[in-house]
Amino acid sequence: MDKTQIEKEDIAYRQQVVNEYRADVEKLARYLSWLESKNGKSVQQSYSGSGIAEHSIAFPVYDGTLMNFIKEAQRTKLMDRNYKYIYSRYRIRVLEDELLAIKRSDIREMDVLKGILSRYVMEGMTKGRRWSEAVENGIFLKVIKKMKENLDFWDHPVQTRVVNAQKEEKQE
Image 1 (cartoon, rainbow, N blue to C red):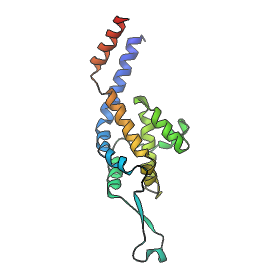
Image 2 (cartoon, rainbow, N blue to C red):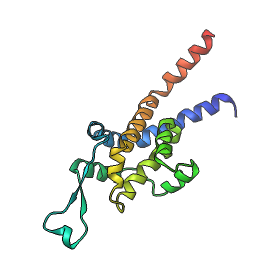
Image 3 (cartoon, rainbow, N blue to C red):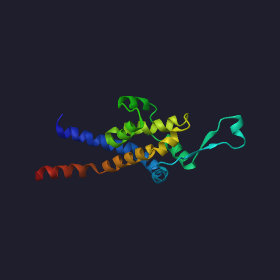
Image 4 (tube, one colour):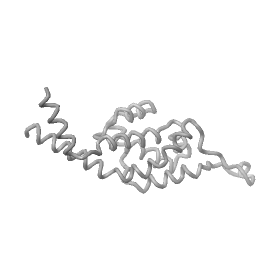
């Protein structure tokens, strides 16, 4: 394959990714301001009313906006039930690895961002602290911001990018 053919396929792939995920990321991007305001803060309280503490275990009560965000995320194509494979493949083990992977991800690594988002959304269904950890540590915020940034950067008409590249080559 020649170089121009590879470039065309690369551009087509990126445009396909943009088209596939744009609507879902826009749905979740509505929550960015809320996620920014709650970054580093707790979004969960323990319910211990009605004497539940003496007869049972207190259970978490989450912020209503967080629950709406989780439900919205579950309905998108961004959920990947095989997120553990992504963690294994990219050797993501601890929070610092997740943050570094988010920072480094571009349009070609949308699967990494999907995997990290999926882990926190899906594990939160069974592990009471996972959702609030994701908000407090800024995981949801950083993943959605990075997805939006990647899609916004590559959501340009294909012709414009090719023409600009050809003009730069002629100037050199």
